[in-house]
Image 1 (tube, rainbow, N blue to C red):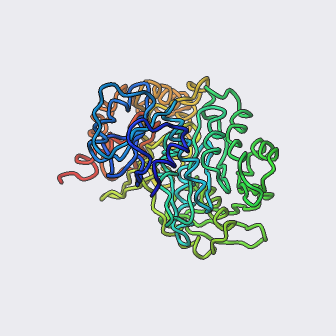
Image 2: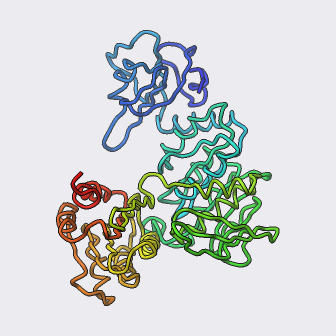
Image 3: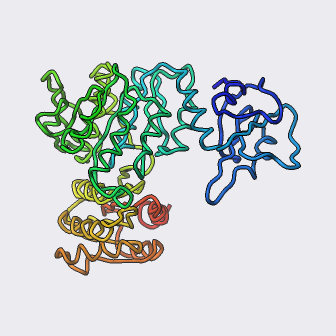
Length: 467
């Protein structure tokens, strides 16, 4: 990045109240603990923090300038620094990102959906990276702050970008879309997630389809054609539209998916009727449509299918998304703790069953958040699913997870196989006496549970005993 302070002040509608507009900015930061030399520090304010308290430390660490929303009182600034005053620092961050993004003429893909958008984003970025240097959203930084910061990482070396867009209510994706100005979009699905705020599936579909508001005439959208409500809602927009799914009417149809050794073999039909075979190195059939959609979108962008096939064959998950670790005695740890809702829980339980040995499958499941009126039934349904998938040991952890245990027992699971703990520490203590590294163990809960800490605590006693 190389922008001057005049560009910053003009983009944000800000006024330079200290220093001048001649300085050059080489990076953007909102974290005073990480201040690259020559950066612009934007003092965001939240419910529990105020970046204005860290303006002087950021400048002292090498920031070239800061964006603030209140005038300083009795501040002494380092030489050769500047201060830009704006009405709202978050809005300034977004306005700056929107202006900066328009300096780049490149394919920019926006990915959204109720479930699986992060994995789909990773798969698309991997496919495109074979042909183009591709910027992607790191982790799930898909909100009002994360998206602008991602866009502000663009530079002349990038040839494509893939950004994720999350939301909790109507209007949020529309706002993110206005910042990113995507050239094409992918909607992975719509599920009863965030019903607490949105109230109905119709509202969820409309919220997700807000990503279509800025797609240009020479762009396109790729949506899950298995959801009739999504197809109907998307048809209200004028952008070119393609579909993927199991439905035979989809442009990109997943025709067959079967476990093949350590992965799965997927056969898909292309819009021209041609059939393609893809090997994906994770034995998780729930990911088949993620793979098909990523392959479809990449092919629409002109990426050679042989390259797509190669990148998908070599894919490795990152973070806590279906991260599978093989254990010495034949078991596996399935770390899928990055987030959860009833749909993704059910899919993860199916994956665990596909990987587990008979009689050696443990599911360690925690609270799911933001389910609104579906909270009780959502947790009960996960418990029932655990029983139907033949889980041999169910450990439910957290206040809400009590209903997971109750759902499993009422579905017919032997109560001796079901254990409920209010805290993760209690759950770890029990597991240390019950399982070893011959077990397949699925760990999954909403992000706020941080269930991966249970895996960390079990490492020495179960995963790598004696090390």
